[in-house]
Each structure stands twice: as C-alpha cells, then as structure tokens.
Length: 342
Image (tube, rainbow, N blue to C red; front, side, top):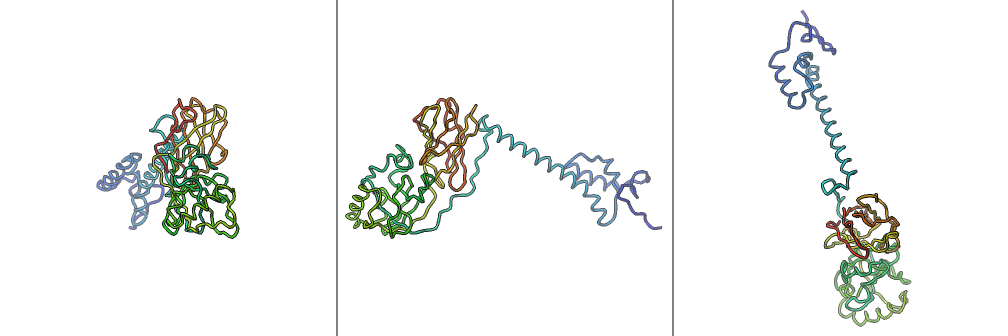
C-alpha cells in the first residue's frame, strides 16, 4: 500500500485526527530549540505540524523557527531605532542623553602644488597677531602663535578659508602655518598661490643668507597693498594639511542681546569653518548663524540666559557639537572652550 502524502494544510499522516502522534524524541528536540528563541509556539502547535520527507520535511521543521527569529529581529530593530530617535530629540536632559559625535575619518592632505612666499611684520611676529581679515583679534597669539600667514584671495575665499593649515617647503626646510589674514593677489608672471608669512614662519623655509633680501621684501610689503612687479619672492611648494590643535574649540561671544557675534578659533582637522549653528537649553532651538566677515558669525536671536551649544561644520563637511559649552550665566567679551575638537 502506497504511503499517503501530506498536504500543505497540516492534515496528513501525523496530522490531527489521524490517531497517531510524532515520535516523542522528535517533538522534544524541536520544542527545545524553539524555546531558546521564542515561546510563541506551544508543544501542541508543534505536534500539529505535519512531518514530511526530504526537502519538504526540512522546510516544515525550520519554517516556524525562521519566522519566529525574523519577528524577534524586527522587534529588536524597532526598539533600537526608537531609542536612537529618543536620544536625538531629548538632547537637553544631560550628558547621558546627548547624541554621540561620530568622526567620518580624518582630514586628508592635498597634493603638493607650486606657490611663492613673502613675509610681513617684525622679526618676533609683531604686527601680525592682532586683527586681520579673519577677525582673530586678540586670539592669534593664544591659538595660533607666530606661525601664521596671509593667503591669497582664492584661498581666503571671503573668509571661508580662515583657520586652514598649510605646509610650505622652501630651500631651508618646511613649516606649517595657519591662514589668519588675506594677502595681495599674485603679481604678474607668478604662478600658484601667494603666502605672506610672519617673519618667524618665513625664516623657517629660507636660509640665513636671505636675511638682507628679506628686509627689502618687508620694506615693500609695509608700504603697498600690492607687491610691486619688480619685487622677487621665494618659490615654495604648498600642501594643505590637517590642523593639530591643543585643547577644544573656542568660542568668543561679543555684541549685545539683540546682536550676538561669535568668533570660532582653535579648530582642528580641516581648520576652516563653513557653517555654525547655536542652540539654547530652553527657548532657543537650533539656529543657523550667518558669516559676518572672516571667521565672525552673527545672529539676532537673544541668547542671554541660555546654556549654549554650538555645532561647527568644517570645509570637509565634518561636524563637531560642543554641548553646553557656554553656561547660562555667560558674559559678553569672554571666551569659552569646549572639551573636544576634530
């Protein structure tokens, strides 16, 4: 007598109403495996499942298990997703609920290009550390020291290039400088970018024999906005590199309750700032600030009485959030430093 075949409806040789039951060992092993993951299937439900031969038997055995595992996985993913959304929305409740900052890789240096260099200011860097087209008044010596340079209009980019770092290679050696000012454009016949260094930075890439020549260049630089065509310059190799800073990002707030101006300094990584947003701990939601000039950012929103959080975006589209870096009782004309940097 030929053995009857099971149907997909669950009524077959070992189905309900047939007077027979699956082997006890088989039911015990299957229910034990399922109980380790889910308890949605009871022993009675398992007993009611038909047992087939070959591939159909294997599918019947594992289908309930796979379905249960899929449901458990979806439930876990939904719970995790809800947790992330909750942390992002409730970011005012303290450090435990802040959205973690994730760096998307390190800043990658650019290839070497041709350029030329001059210098301005005194031998000790005097005359170069206060003010300039980037607006770093009073902060140059603290954040960037003497190794700074004014860059040409294309690199200055209406202030967006302020804070970027460049390595320059000359006949004597190399030096890494920070862009803190705008230099005159290249004179006729010169190729590449123009870097107008502080004298301490300039002397790191030229030999001692250039000192007499350096004085001549300084004389012309101090008496003209554009270098005369007959003034020679030092040919250099230029490469933009990552900025290495000590400590966190600094924020200096000036202005009044109706017009707030923020200067951002000591930015690592790409160094330049192309976007800045501010958020308070009460009434002020995330508000994008506008570049006034250089590296000075403004907003007309009243920020007084709020613990302020700033979010900085650099030229390589990386972001860093300084959570509650400014306390509620903050004062104008003071600098506040974050604990983290790029």
